[in-house]
Image (cartoon, rainbow, N blue to C red; front, side, top):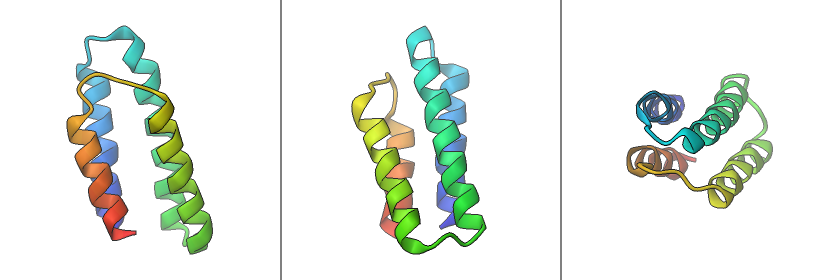
Length: 84
């Protein structure tokens, strides 16, 4: 599960580095920060209910924002969620 989340984080980082949309950078940075907290929580063995809550909060973050070229991060996020 950690590996799948790490792949999502790397895909976000790649998108941040490659985006040509200045407005998208702030969103990728927010996604990265939030995903990092999820990974840290997972590593520290957070209670499953709290982990699910963090994942749901991340989903809301993704839902209220829009970025170009989100296909790869979206795929890796879905891969992680299936393991949860």
